[in-house]
Amino acid sequence: MIVLFKTVRDVMKADAICRTTGVETVIIPVPEKISGQCGMCLRMDKSVIIRFKEVMANSKIEYRIYEQ
Image 1 (tube, helix red, strand yellow):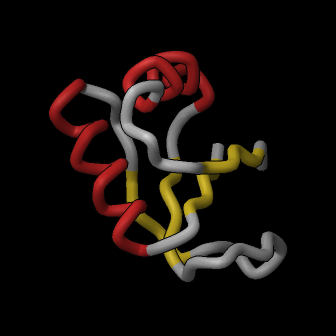
Image 2 (spheres, rainbow, N blue to C red; image 1 turned 180 degrees about the horizontal axis):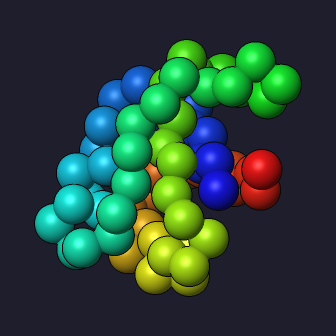
């Protein structure tokens, strides 16, 4: 799964939240086939996406999820 954000700052904040809550993510460049407003995104396994949504619910960070 790929998660896009509006800014690199949002990517970094979301990654920090995920790390502190045990959601495994990797920061990667946005794949060319996906257009985004930011050059970086988060990649994660599909099995953690529900937990990701839970931990991001109160963050006020906007994101879009893409399945690869």
